[in-house]
Length: 197
Image 1 (cartoon, rainbow, N blue to C red):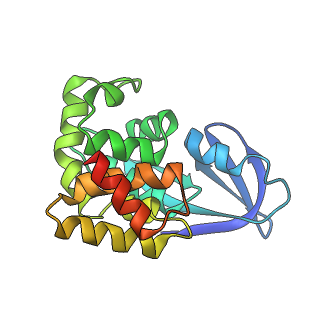
Image 2: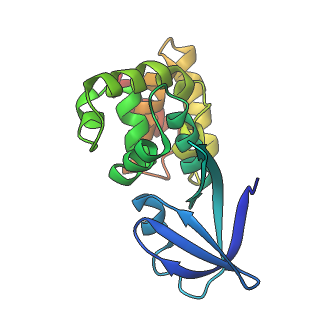
């Protein structure tokens, strides 16, 4: 199984990409999130993470602009009743961080707003994925702290957890603070988080 493909974009549409790797064109199904990340790359060499999905005797390769998105795709397809098409629809309708926030805050309404996801499916996604995302099996820890203040965010999170706050609540607070101020210091993060928690 391929882990990733690098090459130039031969074709790019909202649901499909063809990557030219030394004269071979690899066709991959993609989400709108990946399309937006790769749009405008032109002649640049791109790296597309891949995931093979087999169902009913057919094989479909999916492509992702980041490992974080691919990990969420894997988590979603691991939920009972959720297939690759549903996972792609979710990742096309919301960003990875919006999806994680919806799961962590148990926002059934946000998940139900995705075409094809009903009440029971949304509840099942939350039930089966909340602990996995909190434990870092998803991409949350990578996505939360992709900034120059990695060390500050980690240190502040540890301090807040030692004060007795749950990891899920701390992650949500720190994520919100870093969105507003990506260069926040440890002290700034802790002070702001204490006001939110």
